[in-house]
Image 1: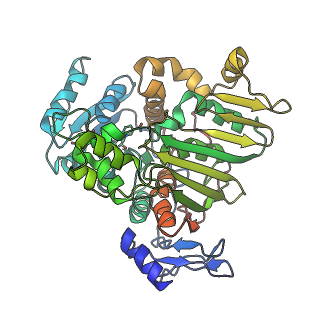
Image 2: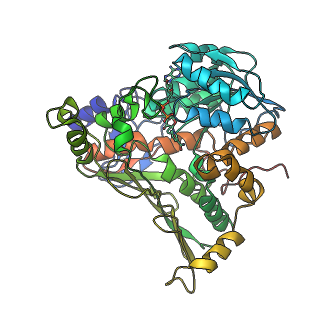
Length: 480
Ligand SMILES: NC(=O)c1ccc[n+]([C@@H]2O[C@H](COP(=O)([O-])OP(=O)(O)OC[C@H]3O[C@@H](n4cnc5c(N)ncnc54)[C@H](O)[C@@H]3O)[C@@H](O)[C@H]2O)c1
């Protein structure tokens, strides 16, 4: 056992975040002298990571609201494939000023300025180079720092922005390690700043409709949900990067992470929408997960075909299994299944399945809804269209048409940004708080721990440290 723990600690760099395993009696305390960590119940053999003690004088930020910000002044960091689209979307939102733009490469900043000037807006202050992002965060005329950098930089940038008194919106996943998850939580609690992960899939039209249906009881008692990120990214992952390339990840950051890690490195697109349906840390919480990865075949085979059998790309070891399946058990006895596969020739899918005692919905591979007592047959054609129209979420009903025109994954990206600005301008809690960011991101390290331990159960920490049932049910905050 000692050997297993040492291997785990070596693999995950979790020294400082102790790991313990639940014994035959089914409970374990966290190790490393964490006086405030409660013993955790769970299946025998469950691996438990340390819950750091909340620093004295610090309180949780469940329901955090700050004073209304009449004009939201924004600075953007990371202007690669994703960032410029976000800048463009913000030009369509009322009550926003785009103050600063930053990327490692000055040309990317300059190219994005055109998005502003083409619309008659003033140029933003430009930052570039390795530390330009810090100067942006330090400005005193910015309320919100919007981060679209590579995964490995998200937390560092979000922490620095909060330390400078800024609210943060950060791309997915917000964090890649447990230390990063806890650092986001602790910093948001200490600075009382918003830290929202930009989980755009929560705002897609079908997902919003199923959320509305769940909130109105259409599914009855929900017992099972599924989400996934199944997206053939082999070509994009392997595209060589240059500052001029617009179809490659900077520093091939995705390939680099996936070569070094197993488990599910990108869980939040599938998890976010179903987490809202279940109301995680709003009356329910994830208790533990088990995770299983298939063998890795897709990256090696693709590398052989594209670069040749003798190429370094073909010779390299890739740790990420092609398909990862993670099962999660919740406090209220719901089951969740989250999958990840970016290296198989398969149609795109996020599954988005909701199953309850009275009904069922699934978005992929084909939109499907069934309700008792006729649930043997899924609604189809006009019937399905009418049903989804009846249950359209009030928010997509209000802003959906504009969102479809502005675009960004069919409009969901715009709805996300629009909601973020709406909440900030009205002094409301954001739709996604720092605990969502930590809970949804922590599947990255926890799924890896489970896979490497032969699919052993791993406890999911309560990032609210006890406040998970203070609010019951997920709700979008509205002025009235
Ligand atoms: N939510 C979604 O649907 C969605 C879609 C695509 C990407 N993303 C996320 O967006 C992020 C960016 O993805 P991408 O596809 O644009 O990758 P990218 O590599 O094209 O862009 C990242 C940009 O960050 C810049 N950058 C790196 N280090 C920097 C630093 N120190 N200072 C300033 N800029 C720096 C790079 O130069 C690059 O332009 C990722 O986290 C990704 O997961 C989310």
